Length: 74
Image (cartoon, rainbow, N blue to C red; front, side, top):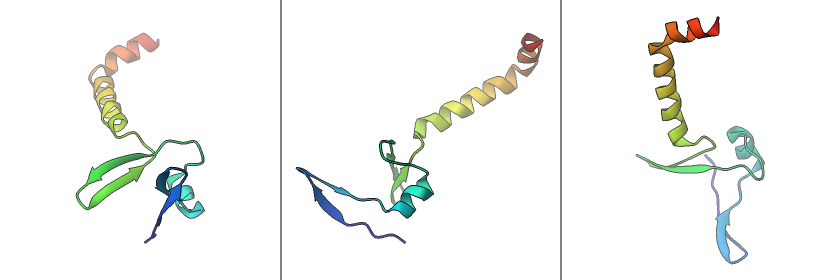
């Protein structure tokens, strides 16, 4: 478990993420992180939550029209 301390950053407050956490999240300076509500609090992720849903819809579409895509690929 990591403990992060809220600190003053200019006129705002924030947390500083340790290198180990950045490595686990596979992010670096300038990347975007998304915060979503979770049953136990919040989740911090580098993946856009809506993207996973959109990807699944696309996969379903591709499965449904697999024969059409196969024909078009020829």
